Length: 335
Image (cartoon, rainbow, N blue to C red; front, top):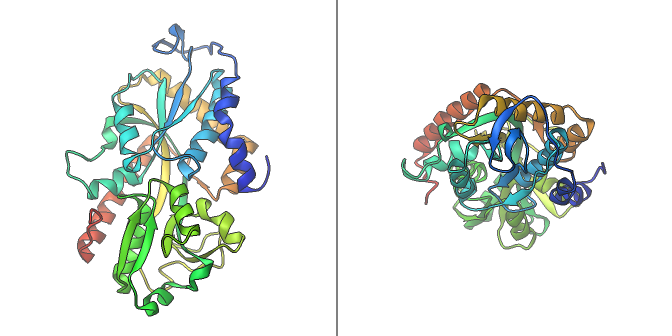
């Protein structure tokens, strides 16, 4: 696998086509009724992976890498369909209503369950107990960056500018929005959020100087940081990260802001245990391959290949922490 992000994107974007070329074969050991292939040993038909974000962002790339590997392990096709909207809520709603047979699954973001509920009514919030978690996948950290032409080198520089900062995020109710809002509030900087539907459009807007700064996953920004087109102002991890070792954390700069994103594989609630086991086993085999490990490194991702209960615990803890922070500073992510 090539070592540059552009090359990995070229490979991953072709995943659906590559997966479709794999012959449909039966994999032994699990019996179920398939909506994709009739009675037989699961899986007997295509396994659809849906993405609640635009093509080119971290969730899309992760989904395509995982789908490609699992398709090979299970001996079926695994088409990837992008269904962006509302930080993944529209895709989640569709998945929630799908038949619980293992033929429609999705990689979902933690922020949909920990942050988005803080921006909508309880009735509108997407709930994790509407899904079965198959496995944790990986986490990545957020970086706030600016166009190299802006002249900003730090958070303090924005404060000295004495103007309202227009900041791009990857959507309303996302970790990018939360990290930015907390930073600007604690720094005393007047700022206005400009939400985009995913990391790719947020990055495009920043490169085009449509916003002053943008917060996004490091994997989405690092290529342009290394090229000198973007200047990283802060990362929101507990400690500096290996992928950008010279970039100070927000905490180092005097702002106690810690926000991360992580992702996990889900299926509709009520998916049979034997089907979930088959999916989990396939995912574990993909995680162990040199190709997938290299993919993580190339995309600045930290493995979080944990059991479902650990994912659920993390979601609960983060939900509590983020709500307390917003209440403390009187911040409304809903505007």
